Image (tube, rainbow, N blue to C red; front, side, top):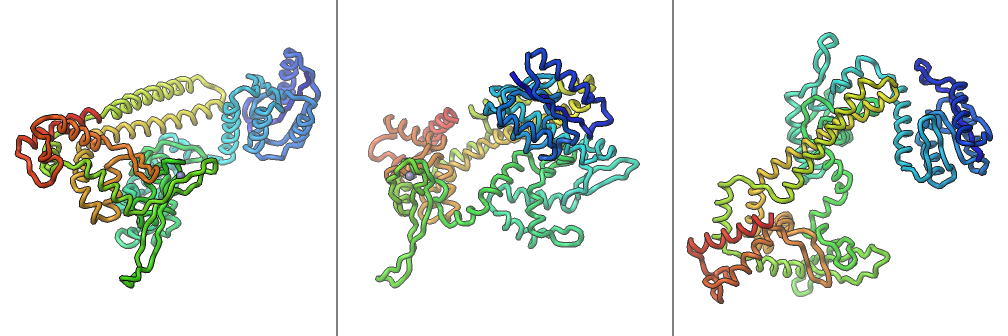
Length: 532
Ligand SMILES: [Zn+2]
């Protein structure tokens, strides 16, 4: 079998002890010999591999591989071969498609069936490494970064503090910190668009930078800066900062997510109560809303009608689902709400009782808690391992990779810890959420008739999830409180005493005595606890 040897002098690491071209050549020749490979040609480039298309020998070699002359490359290290993403991609693709059959380095060999990702990761790291070198990070800055102190100018809400002698750090700006934090919370409530929050800032809490009112583009940029969740970027790398954070990492990701997706559609969704909630039960596509305006002759007035229909966007399915009017949806919802009717006294009694108690953990929360704890443990072990090995590692290139991994683990552990904390908070709030659901159920009938769009959305949110329309019928997966109400009614229906045509659970005309109220509530509470 034929092979090519590719050698490249590395200009960027003159100061280090790197194998000379001749040493590299000698070793690669030996490897070729030991593997029984015939060397077709030895290619040598002088230039760095940091930018694509700058190495004539490398280009020539690639052409000759394509012509099939040799299918195996021998190179000292994977990063000799490429240190830029264009050529990484090229090599990785050729390896995956068997155009290159093997890449042999002094340390290991890469085969087409190998995890190409591994190759991508290693070469991407080489790419990152070269970028870091060109960033020419100053020593003082670097040590600040390692301590978790952002060495640049503090973002809005923070101040640079200290001097060279005593050391510089970043502290919360007592005036702006609470304002910026409040703006984050407003966005996190998902009640407002970025533009709306921007207007609130202008009117109520104006933020100035260098004497000028913050522009929308700077405002927009601010909410893309991970500094606010305790992570900062420096020289292309992420670091966990020691500064006081305003939000958690998950909250930051959530804001990014809906700024990118919902910004355009959110505004218009607000005009339709059921838009973005239903999926087509036939083809699983989205159900969208349309408004039609008609002129009514008898009243001499314009009237608008809302329709909800499948977008029919799945090409492989010939979806026949017909549109439903808002009126049809609401009459079906009214039936669903009727099914979960319980006298107000029962809800009021339960809401009072729950308000006095502490929240209890659900099954799902218990499992999530356990998994989070285990994940934190695993990552912490990995982190400690790297910490120990870092002391022994002498190769500065590997040290750099290890440090990067170490930072990455630190950030991930912090994120998991935050998730764990918010889960504990959620557990403490569990009863609060049930109370919320009970209140919504209690008022659902009225809200459906005369509530605002927001209130109607809230009804659906508390009734259940996975909303579908199939054959003009609405369907959903009931929320566990709703499920418990249904079970309670069935249970009581099957019992004597409270059953029969005059059963007050099924009519609004009769009121229950205190004994009956207690019985119904504790039955309901048992079902809620069991399905939590
Ligand atoms: Zn459909």
